[in-house]
Amino acid sequence: MDLVLFLVFALFAVACAINVVVQTHPIASAISLIGVMASLAVLYLLLGAEFIAAAQVIVYAGAVMVLFVFVIMLLNAGTESKTGRSLVAQALGVPSLVALLGILAFFVQRLFPREASSRFGAFTGGSAKAVGKALFTTYLLPFEATSILILIAIVGAIVLAHKEMD
Amino acid sequence: MAAVPISWFLTLSAVLFVTGAAGFLFRRNIITVFMSIELMLNAVNLSFVTFAYQFKKVDGHLLALFVMVVAAAEAAVGLAIILTVFKRRPSLNIDEVNSMKN
Image (cartoon, rainbow over all chains, first blue to last red; front, side, top):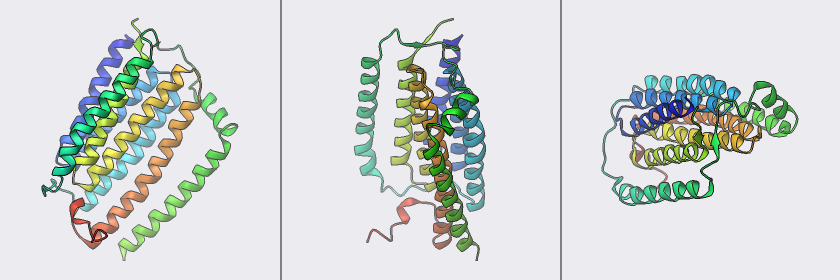
């Protein structure tokens, strides 16, 4: 059952990720990205990260992607035009990305023993209680820093968008 | 109940990261480039959660949570910058935003 769920949602995530890259219209890419995020939330649940799975759906698939779709709508973004100036990036990029993937996959397969496997329910430390306890004790200082970061982001977004308005 | 090897999760994370990097390099639409960055951040989050499972510690979940917060802040500011750039030159092609290059 674990294996079936993993395979179904992993293949769905990879298919959606490739669709994000190959689609020429931004709205199709955005919808595919929501598919990637939703299937990653299922994989987080398989790994016992229930709070992160909920936050993934609410924050990423909800808030961030709504922002993206809203901006695509606002700018009336159409199909992208090719300028042919990315040929160097493609010529150098494809071999180096394949090499990067090969190196990563090689080390992952090499360093992790085959018997290291995940089983649903084997790790229950990802509940909202456990995450909240760690967030407000061990990680209190980074938590406060992120609240300041969000404040700065809000002010920055308002300043930039206000200049846009007038 | 068949178990899933930990290395499969990490390999999936690597595949998603490389796909996002490919989109970042090859796409010319500034919004799609931005979405590719989000894809890479999601791939890294998957490895954080996998490592949290592997070492049976909650710290990886906290790191994934902080990545989400930073990504949300980055999306807000980045999309505001895209709006401002679009007001000056009505094009979403990143090849045409090159006034700092010359």
